[in-house]
Every structure is written in structure tokens, then in C-alpha cells.
Length: 223
Image (cartoon, rainbow, N blue to C red):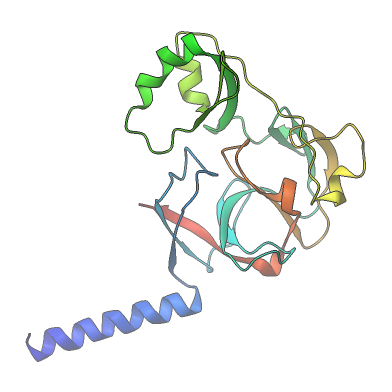
């Protein structure tokens, strides 16, 4: 390797280290399916702390409850002062459906015959998850776009599970659950994040609001 090329590579490597250490440009692997289908399992995301996230942006952060030290990526749903409501797993912010144009993933309970017709569409798809819940029924997760085009009519399963961790929201009403709650007003300096795989995401419904200081950057692109 000639001296000029070596010096050029040293400069590029040093610049990359500098950008990563300062957070100006960094990357993470996404190991879970909590943001499927829009951030596939095991994809890489690239982001920057120079860009402040807007509503519906993906951002990476640490949860304010300090249960772990992991950096997590989710979609920003509501900002300080926003009026947030959840209806059957869809979010309404300031009375506007912010999920309207998103391809989200929800859970379904289907019979074995329908599952037999559905399963061939997902051969080789590592992100496809399903669980038998009885001898006649399967629990699975499907994207809105797929369900809208599938020839059989499928009925969503809307969980009424309560969150034990996020008592700040769910202790306010005995009728509220993870898919139906609000309206609530997001406190100053707090943010509400959620995964796109709505029935398979440990997000602000479980872990609580995210402090502004814990937001590390905004997604620029994925690979």
C-alpha cells in the first residue's frame, strides 16, 4: 500500500471514529421484530444526533425508567403537550390518526384451515412469527398491507392486557389497557414511543415516557 493511500484511509477511519463517538453519525443493529415491517429484524440503522426527531420519525434512545442500559429504536408518536389517545392499537394525536398512512403489524387469531392458506406466503421469512393456542387456532402477526390484499377476511385480535410497569397511565382508569387508553397529555420534557409491531413491542405503553435527554438521535436510513 502506498503512503498516500494509507494516509487517506487513516483520515477516513479517524473521521468515522470521531463521528461515532460524538453521535453525529452512528449505527445500530436491530435484533428484534418490534418494529416490523418497517425495520426488519437484524437490519442496520444509521442515524445522527444532529437531527431532532419529529412525530412519526424513528429515533433511538434509552428508557427513562433505567431498567437497562440498552439503546432502543422506536417510532416517536407524541411530543410534550400533545394530546394522545389509543383506539384498538391505533394512535390519535391531537385528534388526528397518526397511524393512517403507516403499514403496521397487528396480531390475529385464525383457524388452522386459513393458516394453511396463509403460511406459504411467508416461506423463508425469518420475521414471520406464529404460535398455536389451541388445536384449532393459531396466533400470528400480520402487516396491514398484506391483510388488505389477502383473499380471506381476517379478524384482528385486540389485546386488553394491562401494563403493570407503566402505572402513570394505566392507573388513571380501570377500563384502560394497552390498546385502548386516553386521552392523556404528554408532560413537558417527555416523549411517547411505540413499535410498529403493535402487539409485540415493549415500548412506552410498558416502560413509560422517555426523557428528552435520553433521546440519542434520529434514524437517517436503514440497510
